[in-house]
Structures are given as C-alpha cells and as structure tokens.
Image (cartoon, rainbow, N blue to C red; front, side, top):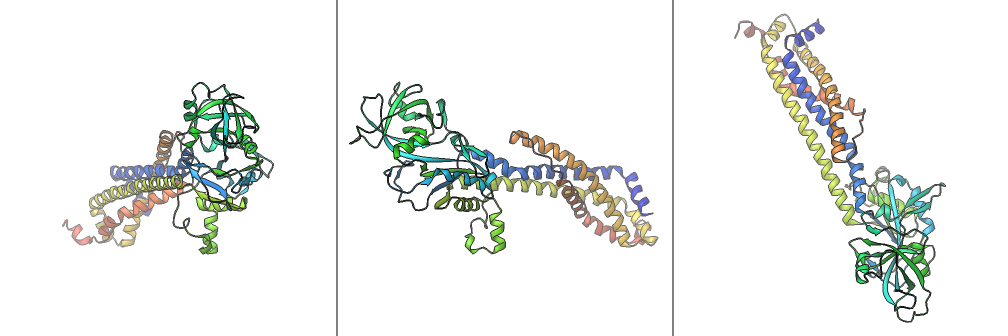
Length: 436
C-alpha cells in the first residue's frame, strides 16, 4: 500500500515532480562540475605556476655573509661555502620526490673576457649553470633538469649551450653593449678574476650560441655550463646556490608552525602534506649542511591565488546547493497545499504523522536519486568543458563523487522539504473534510 501511494503520487502530479527533479539536477550538475575542478585545480594551477620559476632556494648552511648586488653574488670565489654537485640526485629520494619538478645549480664567478685572443680585458660576471643536464639518482635512474625546467621564461635568440661544452649565451644588455662582437656565432675568451694582475691567466674560448633575455641581472652577464664556471673558480664539482621548482599546496596554520612544537600526529600530517615548509625540511635532510628557504614572492603569490580560487569554487558550490534547496522547498510547499485533501483523508482513516512524513520523504529521496544521477552526468560533461577551456586539459571524471553527489542531493531534497512537511503533519482532518 505504501509503495502504491508513492507511485500514484508521481502519476497524479508529474509536473511538480519534474520541476523538483530539475532543480536538483541543475544544483547537482553545478556541484559536480565545481567539485571535480576543485579537486584538480590545486595541481593544475601549481603546474601552471611553475612557469613562474623556482620557489625554493638552497644555500650552504655555513656560508659567509653574502655580498649581492642586483641578485649577483660578488664574494671572492675563495670565500663562502660550496655544495657538492654529486649530492643533487638525493633530492629525488625524499618523500615528496615526485613533486620536485626540477632544480638548477648556480655558480657566479667574477671573470674577464677578451673579444680576441690578444684583445683587451673586460670585467664580467660568468654564471655557471645547467640547461638540460642528466642527474644520476641513487635508484639507478637519471633525472634531466636545468634551466629548461626551473626558468622556462628565459628566452634566447639562437640556441642554448650544450652542457659540458665550451659554449655559452650572452645577456641581452651585454650583447647590446658590444653589437656585432658578442652575438650568436662569435667566440670570445674568458679567464678568471678581474683585469688587474691576471693578464697571464688561462684563456678559455667560449663559443656564443645565443643571446638570452631574462629581465634580471643575467642580462649583463655571460651564462655558461656549470663546468666552465667550476674551472674558472677552481671549485670542480661544486656550486653555491640551487634553485628548486616544487609542486606545493597553499600554506595554512599547520604549515606555518614550528615542527618542534607539533604533536606526533600533527608532525605526521605536516610531513605527509606537500607544504613548502615540509618539502624544504626533507630537502635539508637529503642535503646535509644546507639551508632551504622559500622564495617568498613566488610562494606567497601561489598560495594566495590557490586559496582564493579554491574558495571561489566552494562558494559557487554552496550557492548552487542553496538554490536547489530553495527550489525544492518551494515546489514541496505547493505540493503540500495541493495534496491537503489527500492528507486529511489519510489522517481520517488512521494514518499517523510518521506515515504521512514517510510518504513525502520517500518521494523526495526518489527525486534526489533521479535528479542527482542525471545532474552528476551533466556535471561531468560541464567539468570536462570547464577544464578544457580554463586549463587546456579536460577535468578527469571522478566516479568517487557519485555517492557524494547522491548523498548531497538527498540532504538537499529533505532539507528543502522540512518546513512544508512540518505544515502537512499539522493538518487536522476534520476541518479539511468539512472543506474549511
């Protein structure tokens, strides 16, 4: 009898049911789309942000006081601490190793150059680094990294140097200072140190493969393979700074706390979350004697944008759910008024308030199941289109969201019906049957 009453309700009032199901479908479609994109937006945006450059800087822990002008280290090459190049493969052994997109060592060397073997000396800063360099990892694999991974916005006219060759690229400002003499296809000669007292130092021919534009101090320097800088500085196999590009999640209260003050459970949660602080701590463990600090301008900008975008998606989801609940509530209120006589008859025949409430709630749950399922399918399509439009890659369908959406649809349907249902339970059969 109960099932018959519910079935006849759908037959007698199809338009109201379709309207309520449509409201749930639209709300759940929007919720599915926003939740699907929200689950991926962190990784997607984090990968997009990696085009902004590195977000972690590694330096020797015992380094001397730096002397930097315009981002270039002008300390004498025999001062300050250095880091071993051979240890860099250990970065791909930390817990969050897959979040390490790339890393690039730098070694700045005060040098001089001649435009010809017998020409006059000119002071210059030579920056030794990698462009695309294979780093052996302790597990036997090779990880290719360098400027191509950590500084993708650096543009070069010509081509980049080959790691291990006596080649280099000239900064755009330096090339403009010596037009036609420092350009792609030209060879200059570099030596260590300033011009004073170094006329007899070994000259290293450096073939210029291109002109690079970075928008920074590198535009006034020469950029060459790390091996060339190590030879000029007499520090083979060593470097002074390491820029690391890592995928991280936005900072929150836990990530900003001192790990020493955390409980064991909090420390485990912090360690197993890709915070910039936890990744930095793991890097310091893998590279003893280093100091890892975030590049605040990049890291804070990423975190702020990720947090705001995530908040926006949750607000849109909440708004869609509230709108669906209001539409269901309005439809339910109208249905209760239309079925007032039916409720009065049921109560006159002995139906309890719980039976009346059960009929209405089962109807709403059936609508939630139908509207939620169709809404989920529509939401998956909407998420696919949204991901393709915004990120250039469709959002991956997540079937794990289906039970979540169905449960959410049920909650919305019941919540929207509570007030009309309370009114129906308060109906008195006598006045209804008298037509009052």
